[in-house]
Image 1 (cartoon, rainbow, N blue to C red):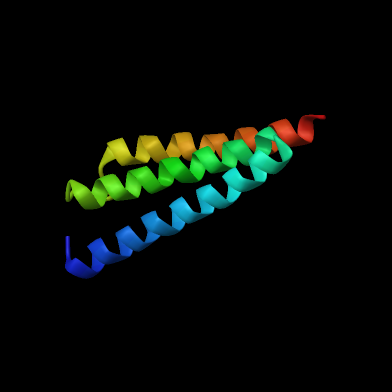
Image 2: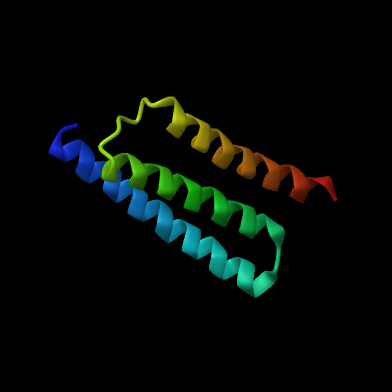
Length: 85
């Protein structure tokens, strides 16, 4: 991976972590599971990107896709659960 690609993956990882903390703050205020699912989703995305940078593994690795599927599944679950009521 090129240095620019590593830098951008690190930046996306950091941004995802900031968004996860943002949603976690709203969850602490409201105790709404919607915000908790979003926080977990973005934390998983951050860990996935950070893992690819730390271990110098390409983003095309199927293991990272599995983590992202779980993260996006959490978002879908949060939206479904919020609209179910």
